Image (cartoon, rainbow, N blue to C red):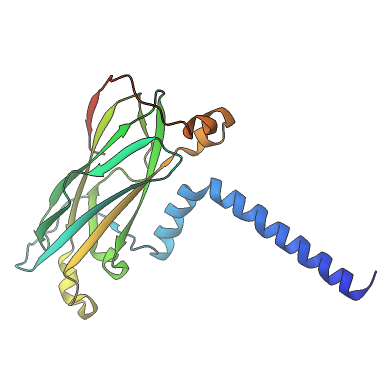
Length: 205
């Protein structure tokens, strides 16, 4: 075997390994994303708090809410408020609403990110629905609450002096367990009209 042939073989094996690795990572995307964000702070990872802030300042900030759905999930998903104004340290509750538009029970799980990313460390969530599986029956709607506040420590960070608006975005994906089932995966691509049966569940985790 020539040197060039051996080199080509090694490159082919390397590329194959990368492809298989990418496939594996795609199936584990949600749990790995959660771990990665927690460790690195990537994507404007927010903080979790057991209670609200001890003090509220006079500084006001605008918080915008964004909602997206991965193409494999037959749901509609939206924020009930486009944006709110809050004072730094003020605890606020807002809701997102999801609806299963298919004719079968479907489980989804949400990831999130905050922009600008440098503000993520000061955006505290007391309660939210991210990374928790949410199962909706055909036509069922669910309200999901997010309780949050902007940490007063943001006022001590000169890098955040120019930040007036923070955007909190959630993206819902279909549960990994359902995607791994070929029959379920086929059903994802068929978004049929529901029978009109509607339930309503209010939930704050």
